[in-house]
Image 1 (cartoon, rainbow, N blue to C red):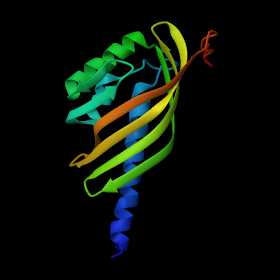
Image 2: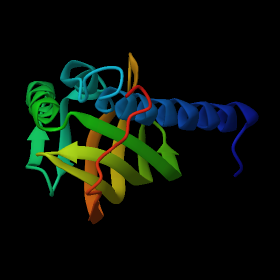
Image 3: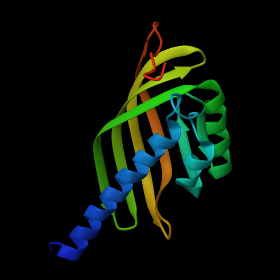
Length: 156
């Protein structure tokens, strides 16, 4: 049986809201030219209370908003510049849950090194009274390349 117009419209709106949530995550992590990077409070607020942030290349998994906030506050100290670009979204909604996959290319300064990082985000989402939130965000790095010249900021 096919879905009604209302059901299809709801899915379209859900996909848009999830894409905006992912963009809010990138925006909260980015900075170094006009604001500090990795705003732990903003990032943590995008997760459900028992949400998980996982990155095998930078510390494994952090479970719960407090742990996610602390992790991103640590990244703020270690990473004075971050600029995420996400592409190729695949978002699938199933009622009040959803999954998403994105490709990432990021310019980042990490532990004094200027890097291009590429990878894949595989995320799970849940609908809450406050809108869609991350249940589990997982990043898998696929490549890293050094930029020995560093970043030339437009404001410099």
